[in-house]
Image (cartoon, rainbow, N blue to C red; front, side):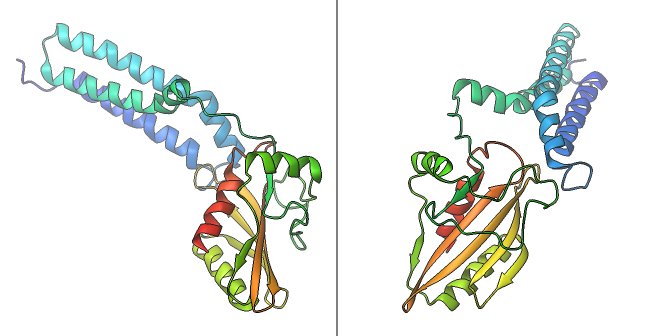
Length: 243
């Protein structure tokens, strides 16, 4: 009796796996061409926690039923389902226990706030953009300097030609869509997509000759959102570290 299979337990696990699949589709639906990134992000904000609560609640009822029925297999499957439900709720639980500070209300980050690299090809007509590529001036610069004081121009020992080639290769390796490149001016513009939700951000990289050496500057701007939640700063930091 205690070793028999449990159809109810199997059903609970199946429901939990379907829930995980639904969440994955919401997160990566934009990459599948199902909707715009902001739509999937909105779905996650509205439905992920309710789905998690549903799975956990259903699993608790299932475990209680299987305990009463003295079906150990069913109890184990119910506990597994509960674990999946808690995994779905994990981001909410973590943010409640360890709340992260709210990111600065800017979506335009640059290594050079005094003379930010300018976009010459990409403009405010870019697809899905609700933000401007016109730099916000000292107001934005002040917020950035306070939030990300480590972001600054990168001084390299490479010639401008070599630095440009290396920077362009890094961008390609990261899967950025190179929109425009000018080897003579040592600059290129690209579109980078976030790994989750596939939000598109616009990037410009400019190399300035400094004798036999060079200086690398870049700028990363979100197409949507008043705050980028630190994504652009992280992208620039990662790029500089890779360089």
